[in-house]
Image (cartoon, rainbow, N blue to C red; front, side, top):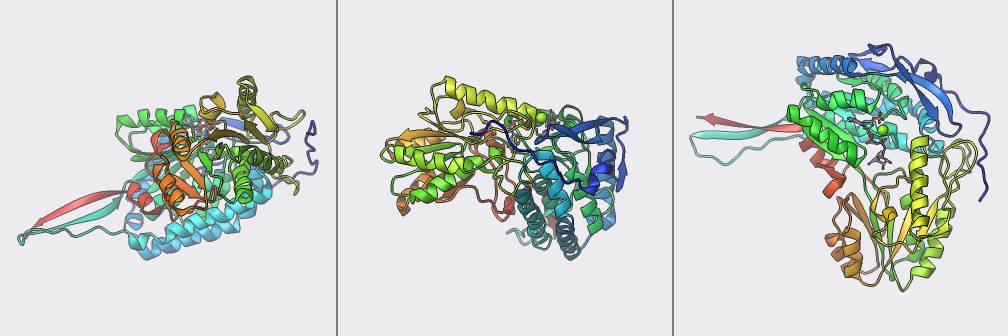
Length: 494
Ligand code: NAP
Ligand code: MG
């Protein structure tokens, strides 16, 4: 393992970096924070300051929520024809594509994910808008059976002003998750990006305005969770909060919602199991299992970090897994050879390395990696821990780094029991060629998504969210439309 990472000296400087300090989008205008304050965001590869962003707080949230309320009540927004709303969302997708490279550069700099992977995320971000563009013409209520003297039916109406609070691991994609569904259902939005990655949201906001999203329908307030985020979560005139982030913060958001009983959806952490049976295609399983916790340096809520391997194949599988994980070469996000970049911040670096220490301390055996790199950048080595028990700290807590733990099992029942023995339930995977085993185990796993003979794919067509402490409600699919609408029952006496 080389001691340091080679940092490229020639770093791109996207044009929008220079206007970043004035980046609150409120009522269709780019404005400073009311306080005039800004904060610095760091390039995690170089550890140098990348830019300053506006530090919005409660006062800016008030302005943004008021703008979102006015926009929500505009007859032109509420009464927009479903066909026009579809066209608007399709135009958003096109504008996201138009500005994709600018956003991919900003996010690769600001969050450290390899540039080529951020480019793929921008394609997915555009796809999210295209998916939701199909919905406005398909949101129906129902007529109900009733006595001849009554005519009863339901209609689905937008919830109102929706707050979106997002993390730093996939900034633009997470923003589209909070915006596209809300707009498709006729809501308006106030978005609070993560303090570690405040830059790309501004470009996204401009893309949406260029697409024709009316002033106030999407507002963006960069700033800190404790100020801007908390103010949004507690705001009495916000009708719904959609949050992605840690379980701990999710709990705070739920508590803050009680003032006006706003609707809350939460996408939280995970400790997702990946169960490998001996009859599986073991080459494919090892490749996917490594991807499951190495991709994006493991900074993925659904990362499959607990790899359960049948004892009869465990030694051989661990070798293959370690070799695959070692192939996730850390490096500068702009070096085409890099498979993963640094972690997002010094805080996350300290957190992840403290888990590596805990793993060594508890007697787990690092088959590859197990440490961090010296020198500039928040780089840690992709790590496979063997000889892990499900009770160890590294098997119980979300690490959010490229760290996988191998836990051996004897039979299917034991595998399922251990896989479910966690406070989380976001995702799970099972590898087998036996159809009955695949379906039986899928049924038994307590997780919002179960992958069979694959790890990690997501599609906005399908609902995504967590069992247990991994979340509340679902994003995407028809479930998302339910989450962004209220049902009104109308009873007519004839
Ligand atoms: P976090 O605190 O949950 O941050 C997520 C978002 O919530 C950010 O925009 C944050 O603002 C905001 N926030 C923080 N406190 C808030 C509050 N009291 N009220 C309203 N909003 C608030 O996560 P983190 O501190 O960045 O990361 C810590 C750990 O969370 C990670 O190590 C990882 O385990 C987990 N995590 C999970 C996911 C996921 O996708 N499930 C994503 C990120 C992190 P600031 O940016 O200013 O803090
Ligand atoms: Mg934070």
